[in-house]
Structures are given as structure tokens and as C-alpha cells.
Image (cartoon, rainbow, N blue to C red; front, side):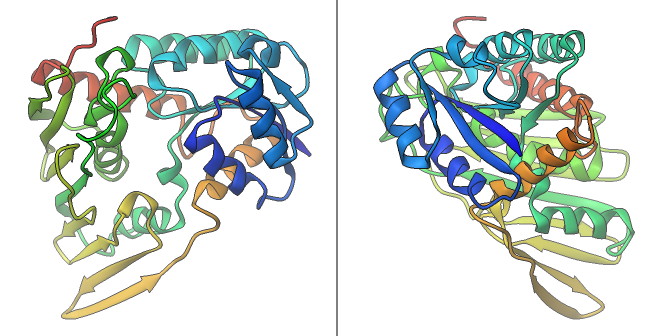
Length: 323
């Protein structure tokens, strides 16, 4: 039985806990929040025996096999490092860090402490996305020439002190949701040879929309993220022999459509729970086999992803006050 601890008791931690309950071989044992009352309520809701009013107490409690870190981006590096130094395995919510320097440090502490570390990029384990990668890799749609992926929703009416619009919390669309289209281009096409990008900013100083063109040897990816409107959230991967469309909202999709030889075939792949189940099963699989990182989403993958995001930020002038 793999014993889980959760740090941070916000929305995503609730979604994750509901999905954890659907996975055999795993159980929520401990919850930590900066407020003991919040931790206690969360623990009661999901039947976890332990609640802590500080993160350090959980890190040093010896009650869990792995900690899921679900706090805002800006605390990911410090909290992951503290957890790993105390001997805990860590599943850290994406983005793993706010810049490459942070992620490099996290990876190096994971190696020094000899513990498992993975970025919780749940879409990588989504059964449809796994299948689409297979179709691309095995040449079903030929050589990829064009990829389009977007992710935008309206958020300018949110609390300006909240994580999306607050520069102190590394707000903006890129790190929060732009990471998804970037991930898709990277996982299907690899690292681009060059990048063009353009961003517009909100009055709080965070970037509110970002358009990107990734250039490859024989392909281009057109990517977009934004907080000032909705977008379709459907992804298109077009090759020399056919095209795959990942159904919206593509980052948590349940199906795809393959257009090839004049035919259009839609396949419902499905998923379990909200979709965190598949990520949790990958973690269990790694821990049960003594692995320190996932083959599907490795430390190097996380380093590549943050490096790409750093390049986009450099090009568009996205800087956070604490950097």
C-alpha cells in the first residue's frame, strides 16, 4: 500500500484526492496546510488519519511514502527540496519550478537524496494523449508538418491577489496553462530549433496572452495561451498522410478523431476519474519498481519543458518581481 501525503489543500488537491480514492494500492494518510483547521477539514473529508498545521511537520512525520505538492508555483522548489531532504518522494504539481535554475536544483536534490521526483504533468498520462503519441510515433499520419494547440479561458474577473493575476505568485497564462500546448509540441515533436513569441500584459504586470511559433526541421507548431478570452481547446496534429484532432478540452480529453484516406473516425478512449488516476498509477508503478523517475515524464523532460518556457519568457519579457 502506497501511503500519500498532500501539501496544500486547495482545489487541485481536492480533485487529486477524489481520484486517489479510485486507485487500488494507494491511500491518503496525511494532509498539511498552513492552517491546521483547513488540514483537519481536508483530512476528515477524505478519511486521512493525520493532519498537520505546517508543511515541515508532514515532511518529518515518517507517515508517508510520497508527498503530492499542490501549492502555488512559487513555493514548488523550496517545498519539494525540503520534502526530499527529509527523505520523502515527491510528485510536484506543474510547472515544477518557475524557471530552469529551480528545476535543476530540484533534480539535483532528488539525486542527492536518492528519492523519486516527478512533475505532475497529468496530461502526459491521459490515455488519449498516450494513444495519439503512439499514432504519431508509428507513422500513422505520416511526417508531421503542422501542430496547433491552444488553451485559454477568461480569468480577468478573478481576484488580483490570487495566483493567476498576481506577479508575486508567478501569475499569467504561460506557466499555468501555456505549459500544456508547449508540452504537446514537445512530447510529439521534441525541442524546437527556434522559437518566436509575442505576449500582451495585464495591469497587474502578469502576461495575459501569449502566442508562440515553434520551428522544427520540417514542421511548425502554432501555440497559444490566454486569460482574456476563451479558446476552443482542441488540438490538431497534421501529417503527410492524415490528421489527428484531440477533442476539447484536449489537456483532459477522452477522445480523438483521425482523418485519413478520405475517412474520419472518432474514437472514445475514455479516462478514469477526472484524469489524475493515470498519473497516480504511473507513480505507483515507479515506486513499486524502485524507480527514481518516470520513463514517460523524466527529469530531463521537465528540464526541457522549463527551458522552452524560459526561452519564451526571455523573448516576451515575462519577468517575476522575485527573480
